[in-house]
Image (cartoon, rainbow, N blue to C red; front, top):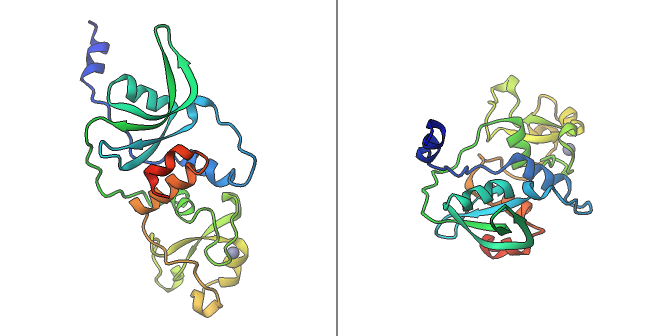
Length: 209
Ligand SMILES: [Zn+2]
């Protein structure tokens, strides 16, 4: 056994618990468009904990690796199969980890991308859903007045509303926030999972909707 294969066995597979931004972005932008079939290996797969609690969304490719390593098993599959030299496997739609994994309270990096994800690319003042390039970030309490760059003080905002608001609070500008901005939590992740999986009936029973 050479060093590389040995070290591979020592490495414990660690399923990632973050939702792929590209899946979320695809779900956001293709929401009302005709469903474009993503490349099979990149299609989203819902990942459940051993307790059936949804914890993540991954790609088919990664899900197959977790299955081959014996870390996860398929709970729901698509009709499509993938073939290797020795066997064929149904493409998973939902997988479940075989041993329980403690998921710490999820916290995400404060970034423009994550704020837009949290706010679903929707201006929090006028409610328009726009592409990322048509949105900016607005400090609810303006920076010039001590407003901080935080989850609670940054929202997705269209340029029009941003100009209208200027260096004022929403109240002063006659604008109303769609909802109180909050940190990106597990709850936000669940909402995103639903958004990503809204075309896959098989996800529904795990996401309770
Ligand atoms: Zn707006």
